[in-house]
Length: 360
Image (cartoon, rainbow, N blue to C red; front, side, top):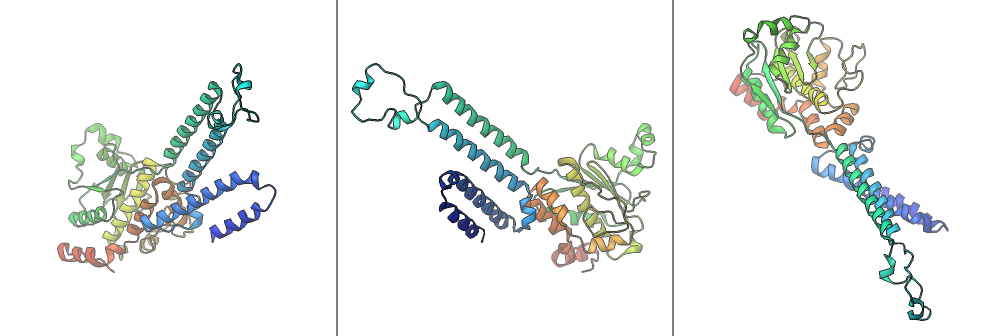
């Protein structure tokens, strides 16, 4: 449909006196549209993802295609300048030797004859365009993300090996990032006196997680309450998830809550560590919610609905798409749904090997 519309517009333009002037722009437009269509089809084929047109047109892919096409247009412009015939050098007796009626400066050799300085300027300009386009293309490219270490900060109320199995299944399901499971429960007695005193404030649990993280992306799981925050806290590459009193709100159970929370906090950590961070207004208190991924849920019972209907909303898709690419968006959307946890092999393995019941 798009190509037919383009053909109609170009066909009309060909019949106008301005066509010789418009032809270069029409060729560039055709190249640009063709490149966009091919890139969109590649995303569909490679990642099994069909982003909405509004999302695709605002993505880094369109920006990269724009950079490449602009660079091609500039290079063609400079090459056209290079190919224009330059003034022929005066050679004594050349006029007498030339055949009658021969045009001065004609022929392939004279076609590329330019003063040396002008040719150097054109070639340097082309090199600068290529370098600038390459740098901008790389800057627009999605970032790779780091693995996330998961550790229990207190003795858990769940089976830690069942949690480890779920995280291993997440590692098996995708190759974007992996969860590293630390099976040793955090030992607060191993801290120095200064470290204990430094974590004695209202952010105690998050401070302990910072100490355990050692500067790496890290999620700590605790049974302690998180002061005014019900479910999790985050600071840069470190997050804490609390299962405090979750059993009284089940179903969904603690394993579904933990899985959802670990996935969401992994996305938050990646945004903080490798991109521009969370969008403005994320996780702020509000009386109204539409279940956007990074929107605050004001009441504890509202988290149940958020887990059961977890998905990537349009804003989150655009943010993650531009930061980490289409494969990351596809992976995040699939694992957030928790369908892989509630049905099939994973649910059966949890029941058979760990006596953990996941409601379908």
